[in-house]
Length: 619
Image 1: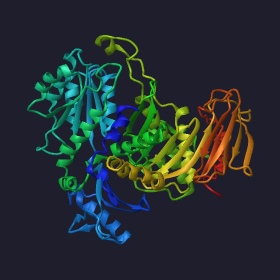
Image 2 (image 1 turned 90 degrees about the vertical axis):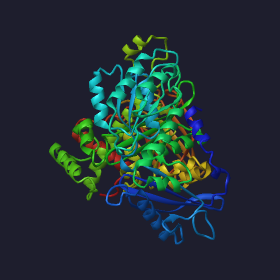
Image 3 (image 1 turned 90 degrees about the horizontal axis):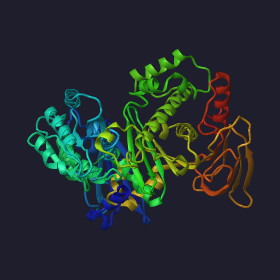
Image 4 (image 1 turned 45 degrees about the horizontal axis):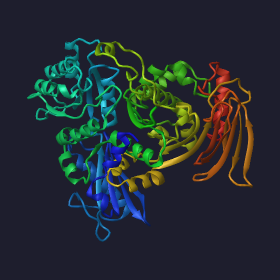
């Protein structure tokens, strides 16, 4: 496994890892809502007991994040009927049925961790630095590179305008030239931005570049910012070493950013493990699950303003690599107009199973933009919102594929001038035929009126290939479980599997294309000797077979010679699949999935597909 996944395992070093933990309260302080969950050990297994929430109180008039935490835990207290608080504090440890043994928290309140990244070459060290920052849970506001074609004064103005919480500076392999990264440090020092969190805040700069330039970089920034030096994240072109940088980002987030936010000093004192940025915690549980189950996975969290995509895939050397991207302009309420702008009307309408006027769609999206907290009131409104969600997810996933790549520039030795000139793209790590699990989160997926709708949205947006399991996060508690995984992996993974995930089922999708009605595959589903389904499924179909949650079946899939389900074109796939609340879906619509541009054919196909999964019931 990579250093990323091994490090997630190594973080479990708290003394709590060796103690008997009977009860845990975990909170996630979001930008608008603080969520609290109570986990208890019952019959040797950890289970979610109850969940509470309250408005986040980091802003005026309260300006104390702990008030929202206390309010959320008070709701948990009332729901569970036992004391968890004493004199405005969390009661620890558990004694005589009162209090808890462990309190942990994540946070994205106050806008989360906002960073700028700087590197010498945009497609080499700057891209590696961006991956490090995103993996630590940051929102990357901009990436500055020596070869990004901006003049020095434009870069200085950009840094001053954005006012980041933290800057990550990288550049150069160890032993290489030092001049370019020193020039970047000079630009950062000249900008000397006013901190977002006030005059008493000393802006942290993490230097993770050529070790030979450490002294010159420190000299440029000394007295202006808090400089922290870590191991080079790209010590040689052929290697990435992101974990020291990611851990330092999270340390600095706790020490600098959180410490200056209202009430966080108290929260840090209460917590029994370091507070993590919410996206970083989600990434932690993803890595933990991927490692423990030895699988490759994709996770997505689609919100009102942004969409986060997480993935763990093996690179060409068989090393598991974790990546996270933030599509800051793709969301279902505040950013819904951006989805329209990026996807276009036709791409959204291709998922709407009825005739719809362009002006009508534009007006619906405009209404959502000015009233972002509204929810669909009619079935037609719901279908339109879910069509938009498909495009937001598709676009966010495409952006993720572009950053989750094999290291660029590793195939040949090159001078720095050649590296500056390079434009070739790295090969994406995202291997859909090797993907085992897709986890969806966010209101449009987790709270879809029918689970069949969530499954169909994810199949349409991600277009899984071969054999892939799909699930949704029931109540978005992945952040709390991510920070819990740093202290007690057993508790985190048990609750993740049994209470967090709602298993939708398995999708079988052959790669290839043909004409509607052409031969595609034969499928044999054996649940027992008495329950066997044998069927030929032509191209262009969706089929749903009953396979309940936790049930397993042996499946033999024989594709036509033009199609591949993971064992090469025309080769039999014989495997065991797991069911879910929806069941087993066979999707022969082809990869890539093409929807007819002709309105009558499109509407007919979409109706047929939604009826096959009974996505909207009788209507």
